[in-house]
Image 1 (spheres, rainbow, N blue to C red):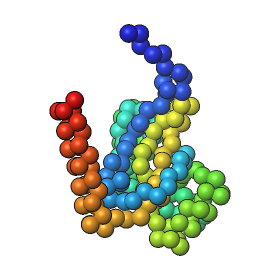
Image 2: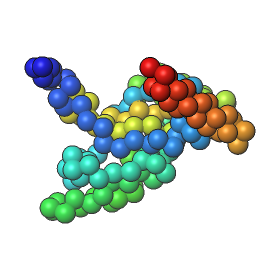
Image 3: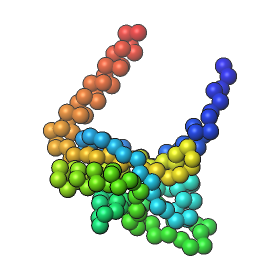
Image 4: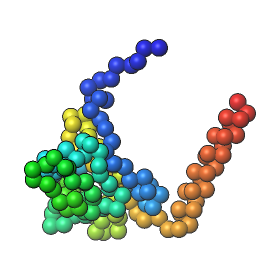
Length: 160
């Protein structure tokens, strides 16, 4: 069977870092794609794939959206190295920014990074989830539902 030829859009798309724990700890109600302001050595390090967004979060401060505590490993060949855990500015429209500010301020939501990736143009993007924290009983229910799904798949596989 011949291999399907990839379009240019599919070739450049690459996931850099993913926060899998976010969907377990939070109930994601909506998500938004943001651009990230980076320096040259940060982009080089991301191309190698050395980053972590698991402990990071986003917040609206002074009318701007910031990503806090995300880790991008230092790039060894850089002449001007970057700070590993600095605050990074996120790029969104004014309308989206006001919507995010209302969600976090009035409704008590949290902005959680879900995935960081290179889009089809080769630009670094981050998908933020507008989320509400889950209680322990909600987490247990989610886990039970996931286990039942796995068990169901096993049973279907055995009978078929």
